[in-house]
Every structure is written in C-alpha cells, then in structure tokens.
Image (cartoon, rainbow, N blue to C red):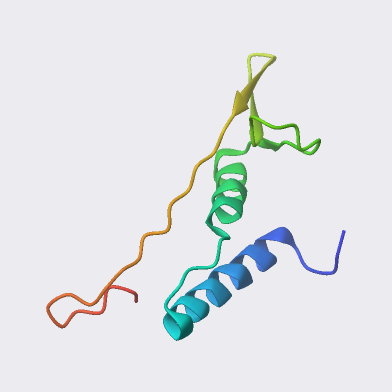
Length: 87
C-alpha cells in the first residue's frame, strides 16, 4: 500500500477533477472509480480485488456473497439566478 489512504486519494481526485472541469470545460473520466470507492466505503461492501469482470464489489448477507455492479454519474452544478450551486 502507498503512503496515502484511499480516502485521501479519492478526495484529492475529486478536487482535481473539479479544477480540471473549471479550467478546461471537460470532465475527467474518474467518476466510475469515485462511485465505486464511495459505495464500498458507505455501504461497507467488499471490493472486487480479483478484478473479475461483471461486478465491482460484494455484499455479504446471511453468509451469502451477492455481487454488486456500481454505476456513478457526475452532476455538474451551474449558476442559477445568481446562486452558486457548486458551494
């Protein structure tokens, strides 16, 4: 494992992606990875460490392992009627 925690790296990736979008006007293709890490962390899932195609994580329930596919979307907030929705 590296010197940074996954949570720290994801937070920094989020910040960089926002700065990139503001500067360039395009999004970085990191939304799926951020969504996967968020879901694993929030829902206490087990990651798909073997990188087997078809699922991103595993949910353990009653001794059964349920495969989970995670999808994410970037929601781009815009100024609306003088209100800055990004902050």
